[in-house]
Every structure is written in C-alpha cells, then in structure tokens.
Length: 459
Image 1: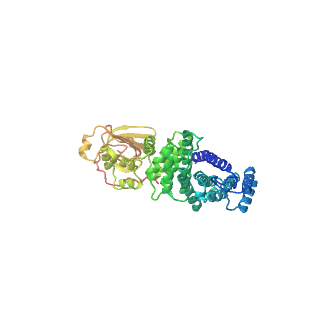
Image 2: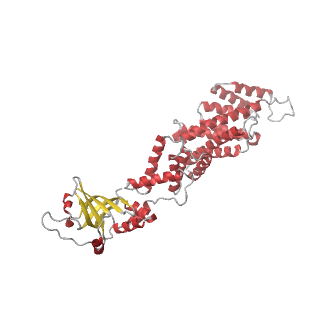
Image 3: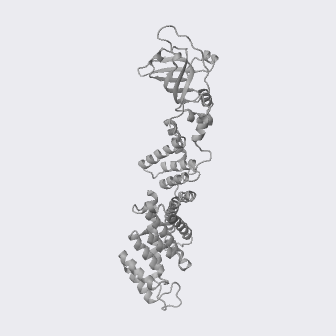
C-alpha cells in the first residue's frame, strides 16, 4: 500500500501543523483572573505554568512524565486540550501506537468543550496511529487481525472526515492551499478507513472507502488495486468489478513498469482461475488486453462488460461436438466467443474430413483438410478449411489426396469468416483410414461426427 503510505505521511504533517496552530492560538489566552471577560478556557496561573513546562520539554520520556504529573494534579483542567496532543506526539516518537490511540480518544471525548479543529486532530491521530501500527513489521501482523481495533480506526477516520467539514479555513491560508490540504487528508482518511474495514472483514465498507478515495484521485494505482481486492472478498465475490479495478491499477499513470507488469500478471492469473484454468494462453491474453484497453478509458465498469466463468464454459462443453463448434464459430457474435473459449485447447475425437493436400515433413506431417459431415459435402469439397499437424505418425504421409479421413487432435486456433480456418495440433489419423504400405487404398465411407464430448481440459 505504498501510495497510501505516501499520502498518509503527507497528511500527518498537515495534521500536525493544524495541531500546532491550534495550540499556539490557545496558548495566548490569559491566565484566569487577569481578564474575567475573556472567552475560552479558564485555568489558574499554576496550571498555565505547569502546562508550559510540559510544552518546553523536548525528550519524549520527559514529556510523558510531565504530562502524567499534570493530569494527576489537574484531572479536569481546561488545559488538557494542550496536554493530550503533547502526549500522543511523544508516544508517536516512541512508536507506542496503542497509547497514541488511547490519548487521542481522550481528547476526542472532550466533545463540545474543544473546537472542531482539535476534535479533527484527535480523530485523525487515532486513524493514522492505527495505520502506523499495522504498517510496523514488529506489531503489524497481529494488529491487522484485531477486528475491534480495526473497527475503532474505521470509526475514527469517518469521524475525522465528518468533523473536517466543520473546520474553518485559517485566515492566513490561501483557498488553493486549503483545498489541497483537505484533499490529502480526505485521501488518507478514506484509505485508512477502507484498509481498516478490510481488516475487520467488512468488505462492503472497504469498497465504499476505496471508491471515495478514487473519487478524489481516480488514477491511483494502490487504491484501484485495493478496491479490486475488496470486491474479491465480498460475499459473493464481485469478480467483474474486481477485474476492472485491478486493470485500472495496471494502466495507472503513476505505475512504474515493474509495478504494472506485476499487477498485470496477477490479473491474468485471476482471469484464468475464474474461467477454470483455460488451456489456450492466447485467449486469456486477448481477454486481458481487451480489458486493459477498456478500463484505461473509464473508471466505472459498464454493465455490458463481462467474462464467462468456469460454469458457463462447462455448460457450453456439455454437448459440444466439432460440428456444433464449427457452426457457432461461423455464426460469430457472443455465441462464437463462448464456444471458442470453451473449445480452444480441447482434444476432439475422430474429426471427419476430406484430404485436399498432404505436406510431408521431418518432424510433422501437415494435412490440409475440408471438414465434411455428409457424402454431399464430401463430393463438393475442393478447398481446405482445416490445417492438421500430425505428430509421431509418419505413416500418415501415405494418406492420399481426396480421400476421407478421421483424426483425433487438439484444437489450437482458428481464423474467423470470411477466411474460416481451423488449426489442429498433436493429431493422430485413424489407423483404418491410412492406406497400407502396399496395394491400392480403398476409400473408406464418410462418417458423420458423433455427439461425443471432447476430451476434458487438463486441470
């Protein structure tokens, strides 16, 4: 989650600036009794001096001890609004994320006693402390599994987003600078909320969080990738939306070549698994390339876009014969796409045809064959529409032009209409259809293809 980590770092700096601005403004309030009409928190001179002593400390351990002493002596002081930020900044330096969250929650619990900016910083500190915690190799693996901790962080991020709408722009900050700071904070908070929701197994909320972040930065690699992960963890998984989002990550402008290649390879595997492990790599590559092209131009998946899954392909293969495949492919359209995806890479038994040409070879024999299903088609056939590569069967070279043959082979590719052509590999010609080494071959009868299932794809 490098992009989120990068944004988080920037936003933490922004948030700390807000904290310090708030503290400096409050620190200028007079001690109680000096101006009875003064607005704001009331405190004694002793409280003020004690708070200032803590603020002057530079070492985290000393800051924490000073703050502990202050809270013990003045548990209800209005100056706790200063003390709590000193606390969690010191705990941050110590990477004590649990204490940061505890103190930030205490500050937030002051509610209407503090202004919107202070409450925002409290919620923000809770959220960013959680993200720092799960990103820390020393504690992250266990912290990420804590659903209650994740839910609290998600709630804190949501509260920070809501409270930020109440924060007024400081007079000395330009509109442009304020807008940029607000966007950075919103990106960070939505990203943390979404990650926390994922850790809490609330995938629907994670989708909302990542989509909110992408609404601010549609081209972010990490948020698009994480959105895809969130779609996949939903029940049931939303694969089409997941594939689209991950494709958006591949084509993100900020992605390096290495990042894009890694995510692309992952997406390809997801598609192949979704379709039951397709045998024809060229088909998966074609689907992937089409998806990448479409997703690069639109953040939202059109409802018309979909890919057949393993169940769809199994249904298409149930009563499939080579005759039905040829008919579907010639018809083109969606039916052809589904049929070809189901047929490519399958081994079909005893495919009938008329030999148009025999091309001898050293390692393989290539037969140019016309697919036929009847005597009338056999007699009329003059041009081939199949190329059959026969391997490990040298006697197949004795097959004669214009003879009828049956072969078993793997269907590997095809050329669509108008130049329709099937390409076969690893073929074996039926022994009875090969002429004997001596003597005149007798033309065997043409056999119509039986409605037999092709061999199952290897798992």
